[in-house]
Every structure is written in structure tokens, then in C-alpha cells.
Length: 93
Image 1 (cartoon, rainbow, N blue to C red):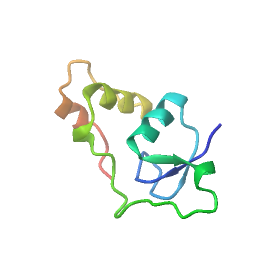
Image 2: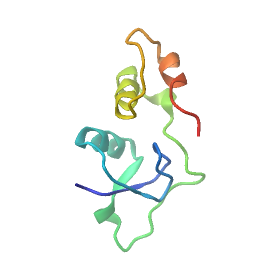
Image 3: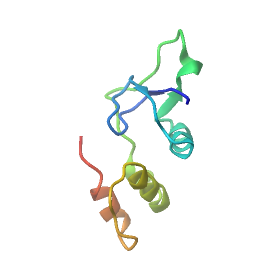
Image 4: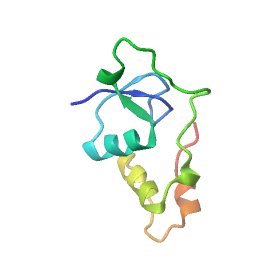
């Protein structure tokens, strides 16, 4: 299983922490969003975690991406929920 470094806070992982145990689908999504980087790619380098450890901007995600994140975090939602209702279901850090 691959290891990743969090460039931003994601789930229970804080900026700069090693992120393990992701499904292939979840890892691919987070890599595409720039939220994580592969640990092997940064060995011996300082990881640029960004300022302030920003969280993924949920407003910029599509409804499908939001539901995928909710599924990964095992958070219940209704298929009829609006994008705003889906965003409201994410826990606030």
C-alpha cells in the first residue's frame, strides 16, 4: 500500500503527516486535487505543505466529487441533497 504526505489537512491527517490506508480511488482523487503527494516522490526533500494547512475548498468540487468524499469518510447523505447541503455535512476542523 502506498504512503502519501498531506499537503493540506485531509480527514484526520494534518498538513505534513504521512497519510496511509487510502483506497486507490480516494488516493487518485486527492493526488489530482493536490491535497497529498506520494511519499516516495519527496524522500529527502522538504514537502511544500502550503501556508496555514488549507483544507480542500469544497465549493470548488462538483457534487459527484463531494459525494465521493462523503462516501470515503463514511458520512451519511441523501441523493437529493443540494451541493450546499452536502458541504454542510462535512465536519468543521
